[in-house]
Amino acid sequence: MPFLGHAIPLMRDNLGFIASLRRSYGELVEITLQPGTRTIIVQDPELIRAMLVDLGPSLDKGRFFEKMSQLLGDSVVTAAGKNHVRKRRQLQPAFARGEIARYVDIMRDEVTATVDSWKPGQVIDVREAMVGLSLDMLARTVFSGSLDDTTFRRLREDLSVVMNGVGARIMLPDWTEKLPLPFNRRFDQARSAVRATIERAVDDLKASGHDTGDMLSLLLRARDEETGQPLTGHQICSEILTLAVAGTETTASVLSWLLYELARHSDVEARVLAELDEVLGERPVTFEDVGHLPYLRRVIDEVLRLHHTGWLVTRRTITETQLGKWTLPAGTELAYCQHALHRDPRLFLNPLAFDPDRWVESEQPAPSNAFLPFGAGKHQCIGDRFALTELITAIATIVRTVRLVPADKKPVRPVARATVRPRTLRMAVRPREEAIRP
Ligand code: HEM
Image 1: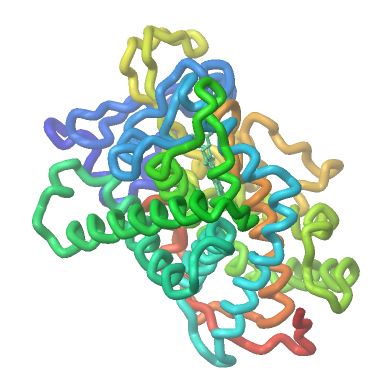
Image 2: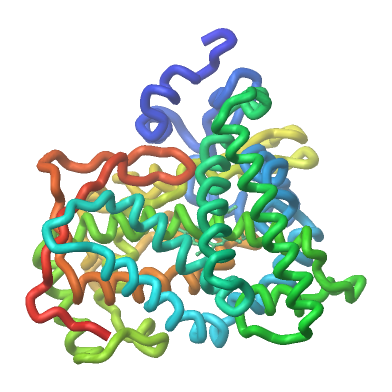
């Protein structure tokens, strides 16, 4: 539509609209996301991989990430090229296997506290509960040794306001941020408060000279490879703010869908419980178990396929760029949609069926180019191992303690906001017979 572009179908049903493009058009299709912003949606799996892997280092991250950088500062999530390589190297040690092994106890304590707060018979908003839990798991990992309880609770509330605000702002035109609305004021206040708290924690840590063993301490030890300089308080803030955005809504949406699918498929749930019984017996889940629960891992892969959280991941060409047989001018906005890719019937047999056994190698080889749960190339998710550890720890703890059953009869629909998530997911808490508690 003149002036409006594709705003109307996008507002009406953004996921449905993007999915319809795969049915109707070929390798690339141009749409107008917002008036004046034309974007090429890359649909072919080979070309998506070429964009992420081969062209990855020579592309900018595109408009969504640019917006995130305006809101939260420059970070590994928003940076491109050499700047990105440097930032990624600085952050990588915090996501090393050995560190994640140390984070598991913190994660499990947070899950246990969440489940303990649920009463039998209570109906919970699962998505809201999982956003809270994911934020707690991440924030405790970052700050466990560096903040007292009161400061931590305040920071956690402010981080939650910032995360929600970023999700909404990424999709809205820039001028809406300037409106004198309570929503904007609350966002600005929360962002300033988070920055002030983290910068104070960094100063205190530096002054004390202690290593508190949390992720904040690791970030403080990181050095810029070129200059040998440590990260400044401001840089550490930007990294933590974007980690909270990249690592909370995503994990929360996957956890919500996992609980939903387990409740709908009692046979799958029974197999998950049997595997947990066999591997863990009476004891709580530990980091060593994460690699020894193959059936639960297949269930998670199937949720990452059917309910991927990625709506549009963007990139932008810096110079004239060849993508397959196409020549793209400098400044071309590109995007791809994992949710639509993972549901394409040309790539996955019976794609709308939830079937963890499709990942048994002998049954049906997974199309390697078509399944990109954590992206690919230089910008592949730095938190993939962290996320899988969170998912396994949370599910192993939740399903052995309580049974969650959908409170509404209607099937739950996905909706694309900051991530693709359940529109509403209300579930009732039932005690699990012979619950196994840590
Ligand atoms: C199941 C949960 C998660 C999913 C599905 C997911 C998915 C992704 C994907 C697809 C990307 C690539 C984006 C691109 O190509 O530009 C990405 C990047 C990233 N993710 Fe995750 N993620 C998850 C959890 C996490 C967690 C828990 C963290 C941190 C604690 C995290 C931190 C990041 C960061 C920092 C990047 C940017 C990496 C870079 O550009 O070098 N993610 N994630």
